[in-house]
Image 1 (cartoon, rainbow, N blue to C red):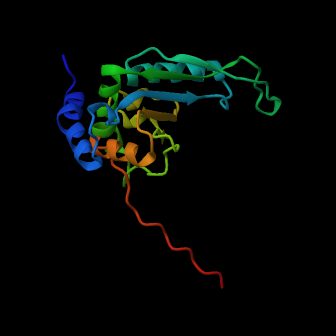
Image 2: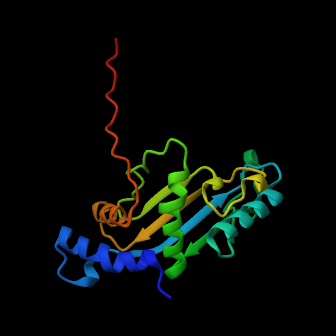
Image 3: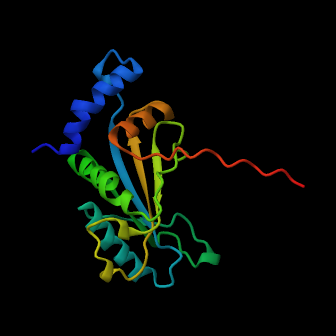
Length: 190
């Protein structure tokens, strides 16, 4: 069965982007390639317990088993050893990716207190967007009374867009709420 979010992409977003950007070929229209959710617990005092909790939360949010990420080198100030497990990540593709994006855009982001949109500065120059989430409790799957510690994570949305403008128009058409706040004027020094 086809996901409603993906059906909306095919029926509404693709024609809108073709009209907006003048794409002649259907394959020129940017699309989502994958979504990577990444977390790190390297600074916690009890890394093993924190890592297990982070992996359980990521599995609950994404519906997939997370892979452990390991330290690339030893850093004595942070009490890190090379190859020590310090984080977890999940890569979503296909229907899982569209289901996650629908929950992120329609359910999780609106639950953030005083939410005025996500920053339009998270693009990397190649059409990919990264968004930081400081608390896992914005997702409806997470039960608030079972949270032992706040786990922040990064959500990286990888697209086939070649420029930031193409990627922003794709994500905007899909419903990503970008903030359009004007920049604050810099106060003159007295």
